[in-house]
Image (cartoon, one colour):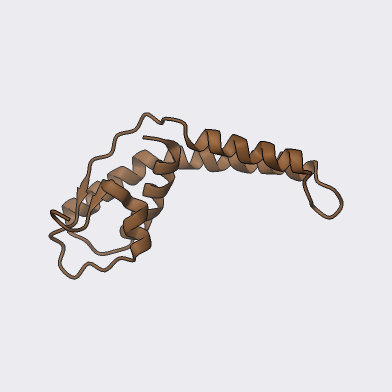
Length: 119
């Protein structure tokens, strides 16, 4: 799984984490979050350090030169495409009655969560 997928799935699962769900679904969501959290946290920490370095190079208006901005964008694109050694089980929520989630959550979770059987 690539890092950008980990970040997306983590964001979607954090939204589901706040919902009342059956015990097994809640357990699987919590387990997946526990696997993804250190990966996402490390990325955020490293990204923030890079941003701090860029800010220290900024001018008095806080603007960063075009070369530094381009370098940051390219680095982030490369980092987000890195393979991450993590496996999370698919979480089947298709049988949960009256589950309401936004299209954003469905998109973020991707194939890691089944919201509708045979869709």
